[in-house]
Image (cartoon, rainbow, N blue to C red; front, side, top):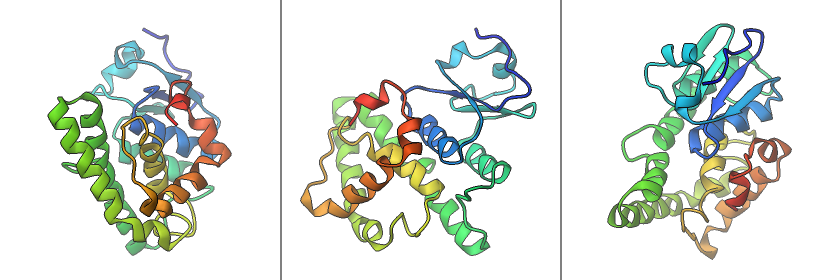
Length: 209
């Protein structure tokens, strides 16, 4: 177990290779948040943090004495606590749309993050089916990737942080979208070229692409 966190610091307890942790690390780097990032396994977290996280999941954020552990809660908290650059729209309709996209990609039943985990951890049949589904889902949305600089926006947002973490892993997941997905590949390259994205990568993630 690690020692207790510094109460004066913003500390992210992060998996070195999971999608959710990578998305949060990207957001923190994009906002240039002064932070401690501790990459570890869940049972290596400080006891007092584990006690305040009933789900015992990563990522887990410690800030101002609070322990936050739901992906969407962590991302939105960081956006409000460190408001520059903003990663969610101010307009309530646009914000609700982005929240639905985040839910659709990262948390709903059969979401893209879940499919990626099935490819990595499921049986061969489950992995093959999940790989086909994820590939088809991405191809179906090619027009949205081509429409604007970022996903349905001219400014990077939380949705893009989540998608960047996923797209970075496509080679590792054995998914080749082919030449017709040029818009997705170009979109990914724009995100991967950002210094904040490069700074968000762990040593093992650097080997994925």
